[in-house]
Image 1 (tube, rainbow, N blue to C red):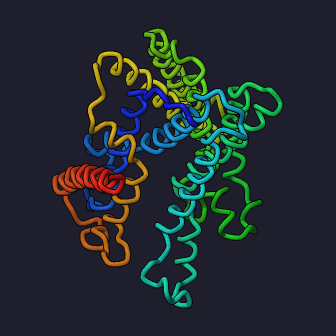
Image 2: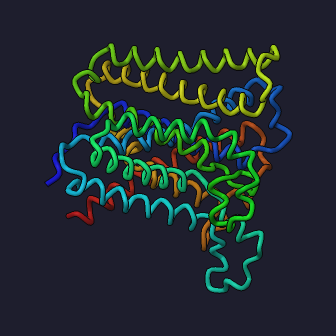
Image 3: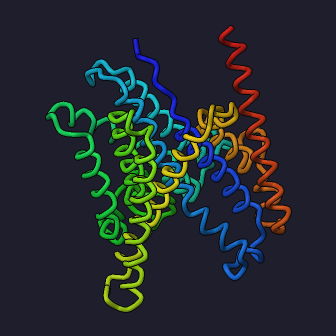
Amino acid sequence: MEAKKERLIFIDLMRAFAVLQMVQGHTINSLLSPEYRTLESGFYYIWHTIRGFTAPIFMFTSGLAFTYLLRSVNIPFNQNPRVVKGLKRVGLLLFLGYILRFPLSQVFDLSGISYAQWLTFYTVDALHIIGIGLFFVIGLSYISEKFKISDNITYTIAALFFFLLAPSVLTSNAFDTLPPIIRGFFTDRYGSLFPLFPWAGYVMAGAILGSFIANNKEFVKTRVFSYNLVFYGSLFVSLSAIISQLSIHGLIEDKYWVEIIKLVLLRTGVVIALYGFATIVEKKMSHCPKIVRMLGGNTLFIYVAHLMVLYGFVFFPGFDSIAGSQLNSTAALSSAVAMILLMIGMVKANSKLKYVFKR
């Protein structure tokens, strides 16, 4: 039987923060009128900047939480129940990633689906990358155990692989001849929002920290751990700023390479620093609020539910088709708050239904 894991409040805090950021980000981006989308507006600039960290937080946290659970028990890989659960999770994430982009209104008449709709179906989104990232975590965990290599070595190599090769892969034309369902994982030129390079690197980066937490549970409870996270996060952000300044002064010529690496360092650093602050907050809390646990434990449900409300499903067209890009800033912000409250209500209703079914 799988041993019960010690629940870490700071992971729930970050998961809840990430999913709420995603909900408000998608809602405002969907409904806000173009005339308000100007970086000259201080509020929009701040919102736009913060939104850029949502996906890295979500992916990093997914890798961290899964790897923490996978490595929290001292069980051989072939006997670890988290392996089977993880593979099922990978299948579910990929299924949901594709089904959310499938033209459901024509599910019974595939001949009516246009080529453009098929291309949209093949584009790669966050769920695809998280699913593939977790598959890599499982595979690398097996390799680490088989060849007696530290998890941190294999995960770090994988993270650097996706990060450092991103500039070369994203500018290469070698993947253009691949079938659309495959090439979307390697290039963003055909609509994919989150290709494997560099985005899977954030899942692997989260796995590094998740493995460390699982193997150093007592150290994680100390303030030194929290301060280390803030320090290393700040260090990465500083390195990003240094690279940016070198680019501005013409000391680095490859602008695209600079942009990718600078963003990777900045986003990874901010996420790590936020985890440091989350652990500090955890140490000041006597218990974790129930709503935080509920939100943190239902991130996938919230992700799917809010996209269905925004962009529609079989029996509902979605608010994007009703008021997409039509609202002023106040109305869009109010809609985001309403969407968050709706998701909280749906999570509570879902939890009650689960309790009833268990009874």
